[in-house]
Image (cartoon, rainbow, N blue to C red):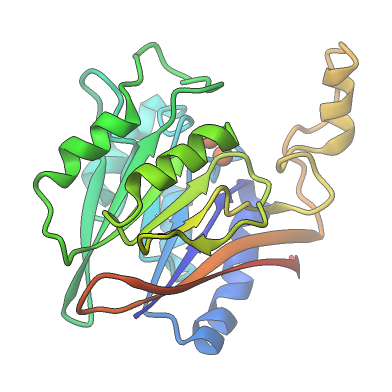
Length: 267
Ligand SMILES: [Fe+2]
Ligand SMILES: [Fe+2]
């Protein structure tokens, strides 16, 4: 089974980028399942009914998220009511929130579990709640899962130390740990010693020559202590699309390979 995982889709530019590249990638890599992180799809922050629909229409089967998922509170209940079968948010938010932290999708008769965890180090939560330990949340979650299950984890995290710690902690217990959130792809896609595919961060799908998808001039103004003017998430003619392709043994749930890609796309 071949699984393609896109990093955080940022704004309209990111959404157009996946629409443009996905038909070709599906054919080229013989993809059976497409997963994408959608936390920045609605103009950089959060996810709406319309933007979620456009991601599914582009050919994505399942959407994960992160710290920005509750940025559109007026739509959040409806969003999960409509798409909750194929949309998740980090499971280790403490308290009562819309949505679930993991879900299942059947691919060629085989169940694939997709789970989302939020890190604790250097993270803004964008809401008032607390983040429980993702390490302990993983233990609790795996208690109910079969050993041969295919389990793809999105670990939404900032610090490479915590990312790699989580990867080794999960090694041999899940199929893959895919880091998201930093929007910058790391060069450490690998299969860990006990067989789990890992990358610290898969990158983003958003404006090229930007700062994490944000207009670079605007972001630099902010770094200079200025209020800044102009559009924050300006649409651009070129986008980057960061993704990994996993090859998974459908019977054992073990990964055979992970390869990372960063493409520049005309949008
Ligand atoms: Fe993000
Ligand atoms: Fe994030």
